[in-house]
Image (cartoon, rainbow, N blue to C red; front, top):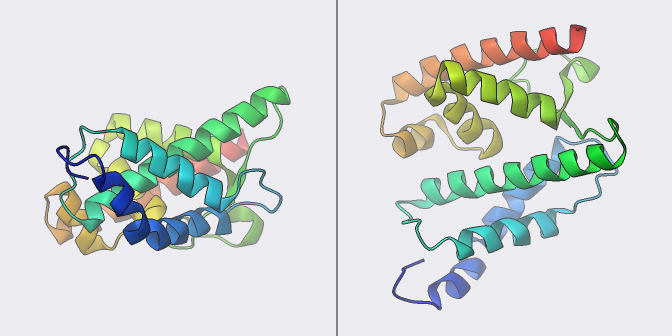
Length: 179
């Protein structure tokens, strides 16, 4: 999306639409059935936000997907908050965490999106890079190598931080459910 070409945003959508749709589908695959927001609406809202922001200079496909995943995550969180507010404390959106993020099975892995967001905010206070790696790996679906490229660090650093972040999140989310 070159700042000098207003048509660039329109040209970009067909090129990345299927990847954004796959990313949105991965978000919804982890959520409980009956979500009121649909993947297509999520893709369009995220794309609208990205196209509207002329200050972003896309460095790579991985960078674009990382920013898109962050936008989608924020849209889902806002949707969950709005729905929860409408029901006064109810309506929190449930998601199932991948085995690679939080060990356990079935119901042990089902958490609400707002709890994950709160845990990620706490993690960011402790280690912004670890929180970013969780976002890139879990929400963007980037590989270790792609996350390392986006962050400008080595793959070993990402692997180590990913392991630490998963362990911290597993403990934080488990403790949050036991309270």
